[in-house]
Length: 245
Image (cartoon, rainbow, N blue to C red; front, side, top):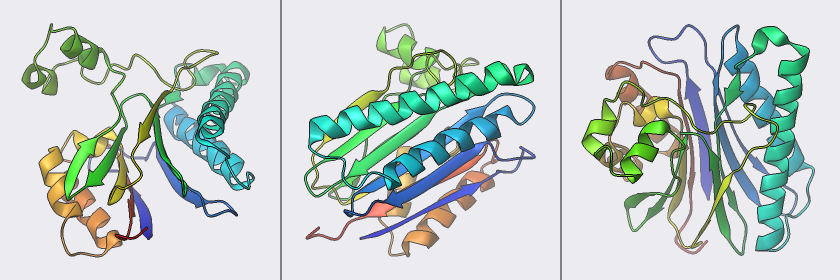
């Protein structure tokens, strides 16, 4: 099993509001987590950092997440805690009002694989060399697509495509979607919309299926996004499983 992550400010932004980590606890369970912050006065940078730091530490301090039902509760719990930390930060620092962050996670144990997300950062699974999006974007545009008011093509260039319907730090309570995925995947891939806004899923799939090393694959994805404009921060996290794992 190999895994790595990479984050890049892109070509337009002067600072990086994304945070990403991959952590393993003492029992060998692995958590991938990625956050895309938002808000002025470096608010997004602070928001994503608070969320990822808390989530990573809580996981590292947990020897084993338990059965699947326990793990689902654990993921919801640590995200709720991160949400309250952000909410309290804004209360204590009024100039940061409006700051928040997306979150997407994948938890891999010997028994199961769970994904969770809030916002529009994406979680994918690679199975038989095909890339499958697991998470659903919590955006206004995605809501309009689901209701039939917009087509997928219209959604791509819609002026409100980045309007989030859910984010960490926006309210005192937050609901995270959880996805139970078959464990027999070839890989787990998370990314911020700085990548998906620049590249099609098929282009991401081609890079992940190439013969490059895990680190070189991530660097190539970031280079491709930057070559197409790099209009946002770009973050990626990737875990490649061996056939018998």
